[in-house]
Every structure is written in structure tokens, then in C-alpha cells.
Length: 240
Image (cartoon, rainbow, N blue to C red; front, top):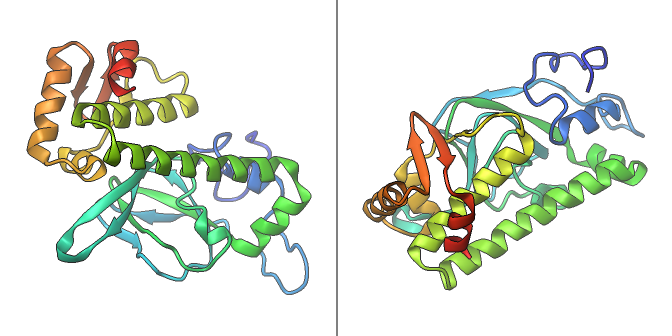
């Protein structure tokens, strides 16, 4: 979205021109579509690190997109156990499920400070019916969510511990590079060993050991909340 076309509240948004927001706002989702549907608020909702912003089985009004910061989609079991389903980056939908039903089937926890924007369910569905662009963007986002779920099944069912961690690092690397092609050799990486452990069903101690082995083998460099994959082909072979 160009500076001249930016909607109120979006002129300084780092996600302007990326992800879904530019299409949604350019389409005019701050206007009424039909009937009694209210105009859509364009205010961003800030969050701090290490907080729950949506609870599992919570009823939500719309579909949310991460504008800034990192969040995790998780499912919790008894006795404090949890499985990280996916780490969500700026420009990505928090979940596709609320497009079709009001209940959110996952818990959304923040990793870093940031903000998100929510779009009304009925307005978004109306937009999908009149715009092939928004339909394709939403379909792509839902397909990406399913692919990550399929890969998680493979991780937990068939992949070894080194393969799980390698695939997770590559998944984040590829997604970040896709949205930030000019960011140089490294990417932002605020995840702790506990985050990686919850995403791979490993212990933090074992994750620390594997990360150390990857580093010593010249595959990756992690420091100061940044990740650099030094040998992408070799890490891909390991994750295969």
C-alpha cells in the first residue's frame, strides 16, 4: 500500500505492503458491506511479551493478523503441559478457524511485545466473495496453516530430535525470508530453548545440546536474539 493510500492508523505500520492487511484495507473493509454490518475499526491492539491474548475455546468476533511481534499458537493439556503448534510472524493470520466458527480452538500466547489487528468475520467473508485477490490470500493462509499442522504430525510421529529442531529452524527461516527478502544474512529470533522444546516435544536441556551441536558443526549461529543459518543445504538434508 502506498503512503498516499494508507488508511488512518496504518501510515507507520511495518506490515504496510506485506501480508494480508494491505489487501484488506485497500479493499475498503472500513466501510459497510451490506445491511446492519458495522464499519470496521482499524485500531491496532498492542500486547506485551509472555501474555495470553486469546484462550482455547474462547469465542472471538473476527480474524486477527499479527502486525508486529511474535506469538505462538498452542494447545494446553492438564498439569501444565502444552504443545506449540506454530510460531506466528508479522503479517500472518493468528488462526483460520474463526473464519468459519466463533470458537478459537487454540491458545495464543505472545513471545515479544507487538500488536495485532482484527477483521470482522462477516465482512471478511463478504470480501472473499467479491475479490479473487483476498480469496486467494485467505486460501493460501489456510493452506499454510494446514501444511504446518501436517509437518508437526510428521515431527512427532517419525522425525528424530535433530530432524525436528532443524525443520523448525528452517520453517521460521523460510517464512521470515519470504516476507523480509532484504534483511541480510540473519533474521530476528526471539525464541528461547523452552519455546523450541514445547514445539518439538523435547526437553530444554536436549534442545540446548542440539543447538550447540548445530553451532559447532557450522550449520547455524544464534546470538543476541538473531539466527543465521550458515549452511542451508546441509541443514535441509538433516531435516529431510
